[in-house]
Image (cartoon, rainbow, N blue to C red; front, side, top):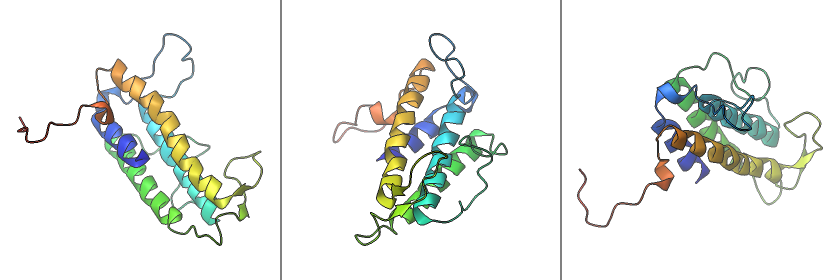
Length: 158
C-alpha cells in the first residue's frame, strides 16, 4: 500500500514541481518534493540493509538525502521504485525465527532494534513523508492519485 501511494504520487507530480517546497509558515529548511521522494527511498535502502545486515546495494550518497547524482524526475522515480523492490526482497527474508533478532539500527545514535521493527520502519516512515508530499502536490494543483475518486462501475473512460 505504501509503495502504491508513494510511487503513484511521485509519478503524478510534474517534473517542474520537483523543486517545490512551501515557504510560508513553518517550512524553513523543508525538503523539496523531489528531496522528499529521494529521502523515502534512501531510508528504505538504509533500513533494509540494516535488517538484512548487509551494505546497501546502491550508493546512497551522504546521510539520508540520497545520492546527489539522482536529479531528474525520471531518475528519482526509478530510485524510489528500486528502493521499494529492494524492500520487498528484505521483507521476504523475515521469518518467525529471525524477526525478533536484534540488529544494528540504521541510524546513528539509535539502539539495536528487532529486525522486524526496522523493516516496519520503512512503512510508517514512507507514509509520514507521503503526507507531506500530498500537501505539496495539492499546493501545486495535483490531486494525489490515492485521493481521486474511484471510477464508477461500468463508466467509460474519457
